[in-house]
Amino acid sequence: MADLQATYRQIATIKRSIADEQAQRDDWAGTLPDMIAMLSTETGAALEEVKAAKAETEATIATYDKKIASLRSELSSLEERIPKKPEPVAPKFDPEKHPLLRKTVEKSEPAKPVIFHAGDICEVLWFKDKAWYKAKVQTVLGSASNPKYLVRFVEYDDTVTVGLDDIRPIESKKRKAEAPPTPAPTPVVNSPHVISGPASINPDALAAQKPAGPDTSVPVNRRAIGSKKALERKAGAWNSFLTKGAGKQVGKKESMFRSGTTVGSKVGFTGSGAPMTSNNKRQRFNKKEYQDDDNEGNSYRTDR
Image (cartoon, rainbow, N blue to C red; front, side, top):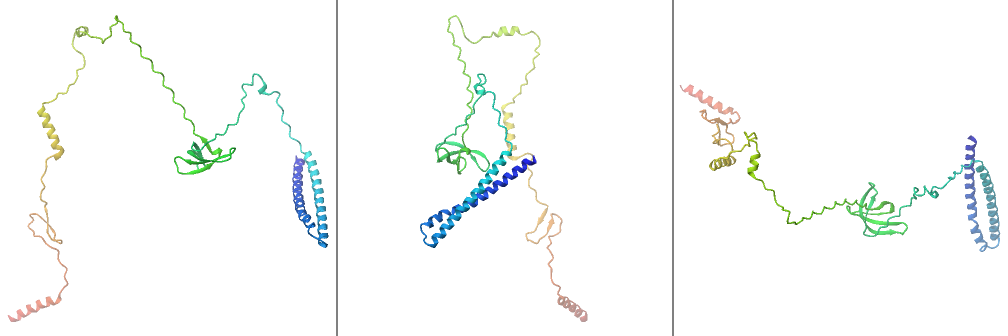
């Protein structure tokens, strides 16, 4: 196993060497056309230099060819050491040629691509959500072997160009099951000896078949309907209830609170006897006014 891996490594190394030598050989070979063209234009010493360079280039190319040939021979010898894969065993008989198995073998034929034309309705695969949407073919592009279709989505105002892998025909819906045929009507035979008509029942014979005795059947509860005036009275009461509402209509009473007409007035009680009061005004204390009152009092005392 180790020898086989070493052989694989040597083969890879030789292949890289061949690629490098071939690249250098191609570089030298690329200069030959220019030198050949210069032979017809140059003269004198320049012509001799071109001839010498051409000979040197051809010798270098020959050297690279020898190296590449030796590397390829070494590569072929290493590849012979690698064990070859066993060839697949051929079947003993072909099932398609067997007379009994010929019918069971089915050849899978590739599905033929569906060709669409402008105006056809189809389903197109949207590349963003990978879902199929209904679309209409606008234009057929590309070649006959690999056509492209410019389609417009029916439910969305978008256009996209798709290939054969992203377009398909609309799946045909299953046909509904046909309704069973209606049976033909039976023909009526008009015969003078056959009388057709509804069955008649004799009430006297039906009463005679009933057993004699008390009636055990469940009585039917019949609702008694009053007179017309009682119905009208109830209807009128109901209409008045709808218009006026339930209960007695209580008159609006006078409020026990009484408020003044001004903004700053207070609220008093009805019948309390106390008059309405107002808020005390905030005034600045006047000392001179009280001094004048004291002086008047003192003068009154001195006069007496």
